[in-house]
Image 1 (cartoon, rainbow, N blue to C red):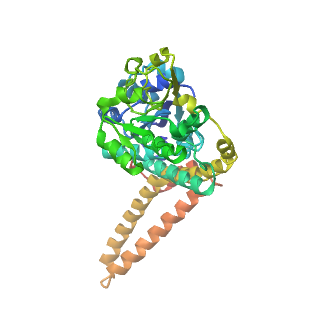
Image 2: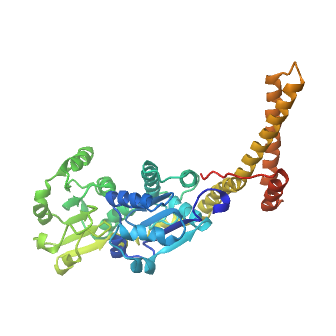
Length: 420
């Protein structure tokens, strides 16, 4: 994309993996926590990557950035996760330039979400942009692209019903409980982990089950207490985890750890226990299934649950795609203006040189030379001329490349493009 004068590097890439081809185990190997993201950005700076953002959710891990070759971004990801290049190649996708732009629009709009219309990824993109900006890795191109994606996302939310109804991973977990557990109102439910997914699940549990036997446990107890206070729930110490599991009928795990926090050795109860693991990487060891009384369900299974709400959402996909095309077109129009911006800038400098030379000549000739008026007239003429050329270059019916070459030749311009 060098022709657009947006980067010193050649191309803009989106590289990553998602639920579509990578199962939970593979996604877990490539997941990035906050420390890993910071380490990746630090490495990117040392390797002279100009601009990038990185996102990692339970459904996908992606890097959007500029590079001479996509392997530079793939290496960054593998160096800072437990995944290998070989594993990445088996399940990954790589998009380039306009395809990468379109991909970000689809991700940010909820069209590429594991549950159609789930917009949680947009907050991840915002936070990723803030982190990159803080580390000096956010150029105007990616910042403008993020803002355009946010604009499309907002319009889709307000102008369509793509996200209508309560459907998300956290809601799907509650829906699964409703469909498989009898007398849910009187069951003992333990929620272990109160991050974003845990909080959302807790809210759905309270709202839909009317259950008064919900207990929260978090390694940092005060975080659990903040949520418990909102919903009038019970909080137990992390040290009481084994005891609380023994008295539970349903265990929901959303701890966000990088290794299992629950395995069969911690489960001492003999009564039926349903475990929902809402974490990536998996936070429940599969060895719990060795216990005959335990049923383990992971979020990948929950995400496959469809109901009338999701079916209704599908009807709004064409409307969402139309909005994306409209905003994407506006973004690409801006890209086109970057293509000729250096030429217009060089032309303006050339005209200013002409004006300065002519004004110097007239000062020597005229004793009553009006400095202010002369500069005003010359500046206005320069602006009108450059505007005229800019309008000409925006015309769809002319060849921009041929016009640019003609302007450069006629005015003998030497561009000094500014990367943005």
